[in-house]
Length: 204
Image (cartoon, rainbow, N blue to C red):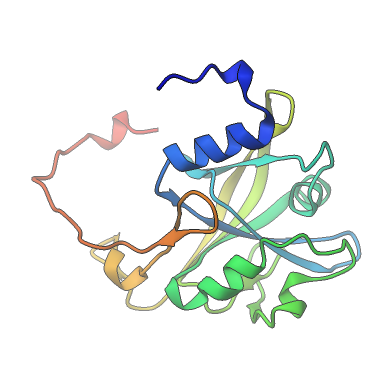
């Protein structure tokens, strides 16, 4: 089968891409509105983009041409927190993807416990095993509806016991990932190969 992109509408293209690019890590992003309301929303077009300084990037599209709460808050406050949800948080994470009215806080609606951040004003999700306090670094637009938001990490929160010899214990992190549609997955079997060492001076 071959599919010409120009024959697809936006929704069909989204379904096709999110079914092809799997599994995807999930950035569960908390932001603050102008009036201090805490917003929480998951985004699965997420990765790290630099190690010095440490930076992460999130691709966020517009909904019918309208900017979502999260990017609007990012642009206004110039900061956000990326939380990594584990399996125990999946229900709240999934429900926070719903379209809530602008005056409704997902954190309050879904009873998501938060804690203060240390170096920014945007809170972190208390039960998330990892949280990254970020300062907005730049925004790059792609196509007609999507922008890539890059944040510099100014503080890491790592649950006690997760970090051993400088590395995250992945099985103990127990993260969830996004598949196509309303489908998620866990790590499953981990296959370990011989390590390939790369000099840190060659990394991003």
